[in-house]
Image (cartoon, rainbow, N blue to C red; front, side, top):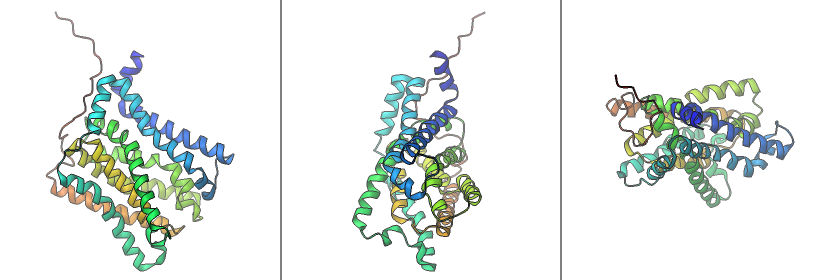
Length: 305
């Protein structure tokens, strides 16, 4: 157990990413296998597995964070995580930024595309039960934001910030966060239900993970966390993204599913650039502060000569 503890303390990010992917991907693959009897479900079959696959997937980041926090820091780590989760007294501008970034950057490109073609109509404009859609988006956002950010912001980001600036921390965690969504995107996303060839889908998906909206959004989330130290605010920012993706993203299969995400990614990266230009080097500078109490790896004391 001592060797495991030292390994987690010395290499927390590889441990976190490995455990998170193992739990989430393992659970989602198992759920699909049990529900469909195979690993090549149609989008329609995959939709039927969502009550099992989505909760199983979402538990991965939170469970990984809780387990590894206990191993690396014990009770002090849990107290620190809870304390950061309960931080709510921050300046109002950070709440506004956290809640409004997603709807603005997601809606702008969709509305522009909608003018050119009805295929890009946002979901809220095509759903007959708009009230139900809004309620579902709110519930989904809160659950997704809380469960995921206990892991990504609760564990990974503060540890990455020990070594990297805001930009590189956001890129590192953002790429991992995007890759973590692979099975949902492949089995349940528009890339498959629109008849897009597998090779094309995989190429576009890989590029989208590296430079897509999730990576840009994670950079902004790291910047907000750097100023607030609040996992709660990070969870609300994530909740806003999940909710407005549900409300605003078009449902038309095929080409639209490969086009509008790039517009959203571009709008988010433009915002990242604007923040970088106006934040006086905060994006690439050294860490602002590190609210997380992390025990250093054990080293034997030096002998006095």
